[in-house]
Length: 189
Image (cartoon, rainbow, N blue to C red):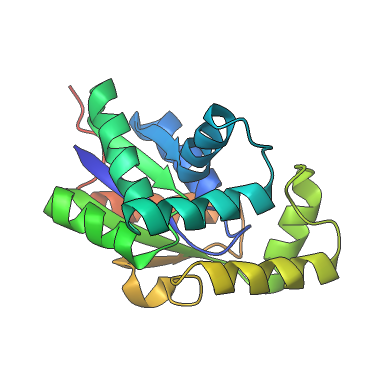
């Protein structure tokens, strides 16, 4: 299994990149927060950012910091997927699990974008869990940095850093070069 892990701050474009390679290169997508959401539902808890952060802390305390990576790999293998894009990696232990279990078949890509661009993207998404104001953006950034040990270190730990400050056409051109260079493009049959 080839797995591309996508990390970066909220609103940088991780999901846009994942959706692109799902459509263009026949990858399957796992959103780590979806796995967390399923656990919330299974436990009868409300689905919101605060509860997600709470269960994340609890599961890491009880099952180890790499718990969500382990659950993601198990899920992909159970489905029989050969190419996976996973978004929402926020902890160094998760990266260690992916690297240990997948070796060279794991590629960690950090997607970056300027703060003002990320803030505007989040405001325009309109998701219930996204921010509406600059103050909310700043508060959310602070909370994410407190909870997730990688939040301010994504670029240092990633195999590759892709900046997403321009058009999607330019961004996806960078993605194509990366996939070809790292041999993560889908092979034509």
